[in-house]
Image (tube, rainbow, N blue to C red; front, side, top):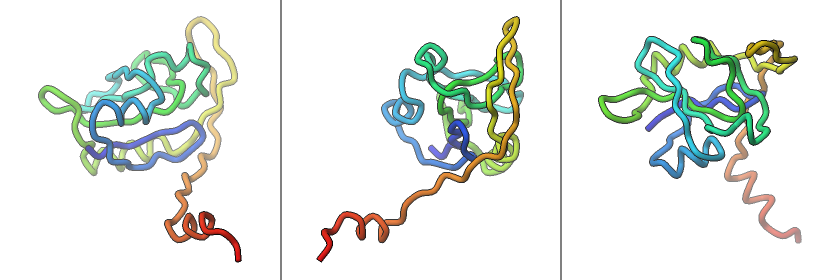
Length: 136
């Protein structure tokens, strides 16, 4: 399924995820789904993110506070997660285009500062090959 991954400090990006193991690998542990939007989508995150000391990622609407660690946004099918439709990919890329820094917490609320998010740079295969071959 095609999802939108949101990592702390980075711009959201699309990724293909298939199966529970890949979901858990993406968030770094056991998954938890939250449903803060009216659209048929879920935010899937690490259920122990705050307890494991993961970095604060982004604030989430609907009384959920914030998410600690990497999360992804996927669509909701009748009985399971599914690909996020392209129009919702665009919507959530815009919504999460700014990173957030956690300033403090008080009375169950988070105080954050929006900062520019960095693009996630993926090394090209040519670049990887050049680094893996021995020098002559």
